[in-house]
Picture 1: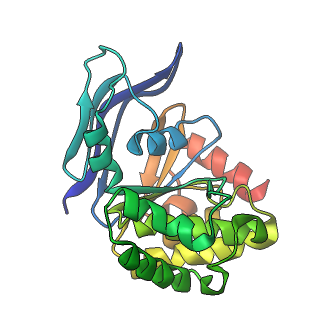
Picture 2: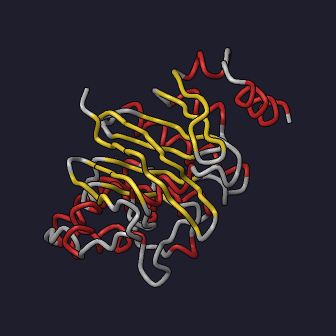
Amino acid sequence: MTSIIRFQNVTKRFGALTVLDNFNFDVRQGEKVTLIGPSGSGKSTVLRILMTLEPFQEGQLELAGIGYHESHGRGDFKASDRHLHKIRSNVGMVFQSFNLFPHMTVLRNIVEAPVAVLKMKREEAESRAVELLRMVGLLDKKDQYPSQLSGGQQQRVAIARALAMRPRVLLFDEPTSALDPQLVGEVLGVIRNLAQEHDLTMLLVTHEMRFAREVSDRVCFFDKGRIVEQGEPDRFFTNPEQPRTREFLSSVLNG
């Protein structure tokens, strides 16, 4: 199956700190891949680079046939607005902190980007938003404001907003880490349904190991800017090959 995402020898630095070092990583069309690992291991940086929120210094990156850049170490790549538009029309991201517009209703939060970026007619965008709110179980909240919703409800709106852009790739950066424990399940349920019922390519960064095992086609363990081990979830969680992977899983599953 064709790769929709391809990192080739990508290096990302923050000053003197190298976060990704000659990083190579492919994701196939429709694949669900979970990235796990300790804080600071580089997994969220992978998502932010894909979303063009972070530049990188060396290597090549391609998403949905669109090349990001090949810098050969000549400094950070600065994409044109047209290039950014092409990339962000193919990829959506759900953040830890919801990032909803507080002055807009739930419906408007979902509608504005398709109208502004995709030039979708407002009537069509609103129809699509209603469909998505029904899918995430929040149609009755469409006229409320983010401050009137629980954290779990706000994150479900954020998922609907990302889907409204019709992305080919959907990124989740620890989507439940800002939620109270009792609200985690409702968000994971929405993501689980997406993974099972839609042909989206999905990359998830999460600390929810049981969830990673349920929804993933592949799990990748990151440490110090590289993938230490990856594999099919049942094998990965029951019989990890690398000592560092076993150490990490022991600490998160038994800690």
